[in-house]
Image 1 (cartoon, helix red, strand yellow):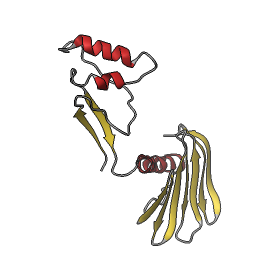
Image 2: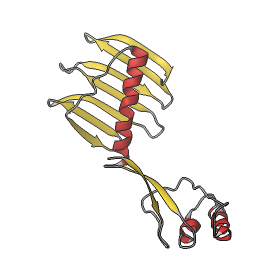
Image 3: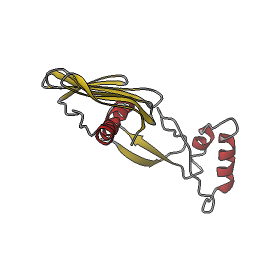
Image 4: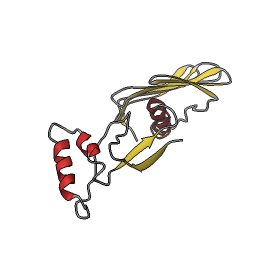
Length: 174
């Protein structure tokens, strides 16, 4: 399961396998205000390197927040993108893409989902926040497909009877 957690960093401790994005400091109630200022100053000398903050964890009350994933970050990003795909098709094209599946394969930033042994859809996430989605009907004909760039749907097609029934271009993601 995914969850956000908070934990206190022990003296000499530092979370592993993560990227520190920022911090919050409470100067008004800090018993070791000077140590905190020195640690923050040292962390900001050359860009942002939180090593000085973690080194001062024994003197400061340092807490760390993290988002935990049951599997990989890539898989979590893919699962979080499926409601965006559904919303784009629903609101822009009045279409409900087939997102039901009973098995999934993950290959880095690509998910292939199947139902009853047939490929149902595939979703590719791009590093820039864009995505490419394609879904198939029970007879293996194309149901729908779209490409986005993270902020807009570059193109979207909905098929009926092996023909493009609806085409959308350059619309903002709802």
